[in-house]
Figure (cartoon, rainbow, N blue to C red):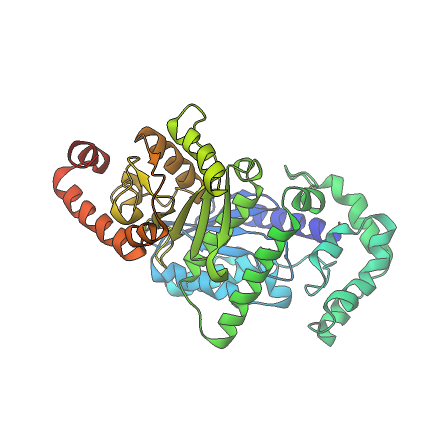
Length: 403
């Protein structure tokens, strides 16, 4: 549990140095999974910045994203994705972030920043996170010297090895002192992290993380840091959600891209005609879901994703020609950056039922491909949004003029 104990100590230190009433930087909320910080500029403007601590921590740094689109904030956040070694630790990440924010906003560094320092007993950043979390009791001490060499020796530097060569008993002392930490957190990171997410989903997140790192090294980054970080958090949260585990829907990343998702919607109101149609679809075609495609832009989450139906052909349900979905929350006017992808999926399921959606059986493959396409969906949605801007609520206009 050495990694977890160190993380808790770091968070405890951050909360002490930057309380909720600090004039420049505040820790508003914290857990072993997430951190919510607030930076206050010289004019009193507040910027909320989130950090998500993933399963690969501290081999990989936390995933950061800001709610603001201002470059003075997003540029500071972007720097945090390029750290390694000891700078991956959340306490050092906060120090790097605060220094950059103060520089970009032309404000002096708070003197408290000098108090930011890693705890003395720090496990090697290159060690396997799973290995590190599984250390318990005396085994933690024995693993302290060999964990890094076994799992991360290729990345570990000689200086790192010198810094982490601690006496065998220190890991035991950390475990024994864990109960003294006055943090409202349970020691569940090492167990629940694995229990609440399938191995294949953990592997997907890790592949994405490694792919993103390679793109940064090659200078071929697609999208934006802000959108990528938010989508990584969304995907991780979905993998843990009850609705996902109950198979109400499934997710597939198109070409391993975090910016395009295929969603198979499998559950709608059991009393609806659409539910009966899905049962018939399974009998006729062996398919038990409505396939949705979601495209995210680099401006996400400040602009909505584009969602369309791919299969089957649907009449009603606020589905437009081409497969686009007529929903207020999918327009710039109706969208909020607070909406989650899962919330959008659940709302689409409800909207289809509300609009009395029915599956059109007997449509040929050629007809399906011709009627439902990305280009036609985008065109029909754009036209409807333009009309909506002149005539008011989009679903109401759809009901009165189209449905």
